Image (cartoon, rainbow, N blue to C red; front, side):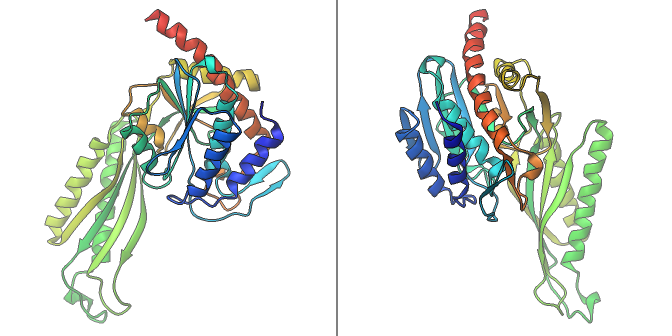
Length: 372
């Protein structure tokens, strides 16, 4: 058994590693050391891009517990105060990561095969989970560790399109004579307005919760007294589960081409990310087991929620035909903030919930198989 003191100190140590995307090696080494020397995992290794993989037990069911080691940039001093642990990644998502590892370490071998994966670059380009998929990691069920709050289970995430759009009007002029050249920044604003208008039409015509959009990056111009010839913007578009990325991508592609023709300027784009939306089967043994695990520990039924964000669950869930959910301690609104924190009580409860979930999943999996 793992003591509360051990669990808290382990998380505190994990938070002390500053791990923005693709700088996770220090934490990876800690996880490997703990898993192989103290927590009883039988096969522990780091793959070719830095993911930590630790396996315990054998037989069925095969359960994947997956968390990410990276965080958004920005360091926060690690401290414990008033029942909370503060630090970058406390909520998103090192508390889930460590809770999963500790829970798996306490599961008897006869419950099946439990694989823990601590992946890299979730906050970046999902390099870690994509590498797991390429390696065809074997699992009947998967739980991703993200802050849902211990009273909620995330069963759906929106999809995502990210486009970097470039506008080149060909020439520039002195700022005192702006009529002599087109203004790339102003032209880009027109493009953005057209994109927003067309996406709004998708939502209003559909009658359901619609597509969201955000302009996240913008650059343009070369000098304070020269009209801008070139500009670039990055847009982030989120697609709900009743649609596909193709539904929106085709519209964006048409808008950009039409605007280039209409304005007689060069407009191009690169597709930075394309991730399909995903929704879990609400009746699967996995969802039922996690619900029972929460009830065991908290004494009340959790809510099943859908999130507007996009996560690793989308990537794996759309490739493998297996039940997948996302769950973990923490307030999602604390994630990425300057005072990111996790309740120690909630963190410790989540360890027990993960452990009870594996117990129920082992039991329900065998029943599910016997009925097929």
